[in-house]
Length: 250
Image 1 (spheres, one colour):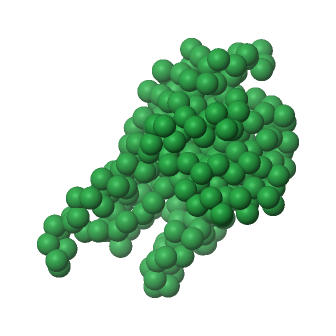
Image 2: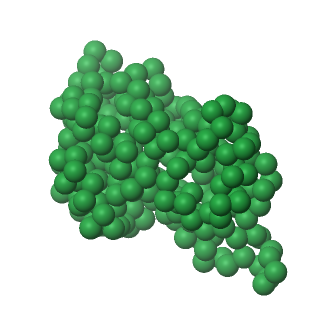
Image 3: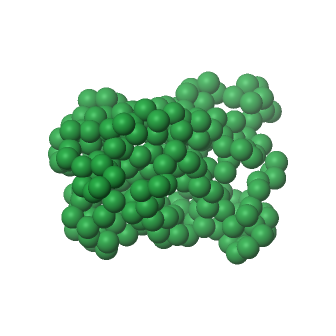
């Protein structure tokens, strides 16, 4: 699908991979709606790249519906909104906080499904744009933690495993409507989320990456998004973006 002239929605667009993706899509000729809970940060990125900033809670149906109305008909949805709360199932202070687990699942997994189902409903109303009958594409963000979650990542790994698990059935559900569904599973990405880890943990993560031995750049995630949008045969799959890394237990 040709990117030029289409409207794309990027959740979590105020920072990290979301902001990089928004900038890349604009550079390729798309119109961008950046959804984020942080309205000021989203507006800053939107002002830089000529996009539209929309305050949105991806876990809330009414909030997403309102954001879709403000954004206009979109053919691309890239879900980058996500959180990471690390807790051992049973730690020194007892069992993990159930509310933390539920919050991570709600934002990362339920939020992605919520935006996908509502955005795809609107995509299905659009006219096809090419000979294949393409109406749109949804790209969700998984993680290599879906397969190799580290100690303390039960909630995060479960949420990203859910993203992986729903990719193929969602693609099958939406295929008859001309809508593709893909997921990208990055390794450790140089984003504010990674910045919250201790220097020791960051160094350990980088040293375990075969080549190149560094964190994924947000811009590399964005480049893959562009390719997925433009390549109609990419559908129903999860692409690892990790430099051949496999996470150790810690």
